[in-house]
Image (cartoon, rainbow, N blue to C red; front, side, top):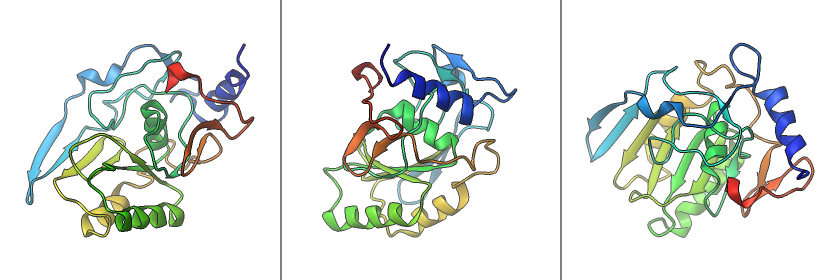
Length: 210
């Protein structure tokens, strides 16, 4: 048995039980049928909001896992989370969703559209706030803002824009989430470049989970 497996089960049992106190597993994404509300805003912005409770909070027992938005904003996900911080590459989406279940705001950026100065801004933001997960992602926008059940997309959003600050203030550690106060550290990843190493024992995430 791979030596990372015990760590996964410890995480599931200790930090992320189901709403009835027991760990939950799923092999399919139960959130595909969730009804989303998309509201057009000025400056080519859209906000997608899904009523809390529509997305499954189950943990998949084996990969892969699929989501109905990209980047994902909820649904059955991996039993371990991505450590918050600034990453210079993309991460396992199923782990990022688990981070959002813990009240993290997930800011994704397109490396081809963002400047070095803006990357420095994002890194400083993550350094100052332990509930920000900031990663690369292949989407047409420069930045996309995501939290559990909500997402803001805009054509040319910058880290210093008021929209970013307001989104973080509104959705960081959303009190509607039962695990909003659970840590976003001590699981998977060492920012900025080590994405797939577990903190607990130094083992690597198997390829099929990435």
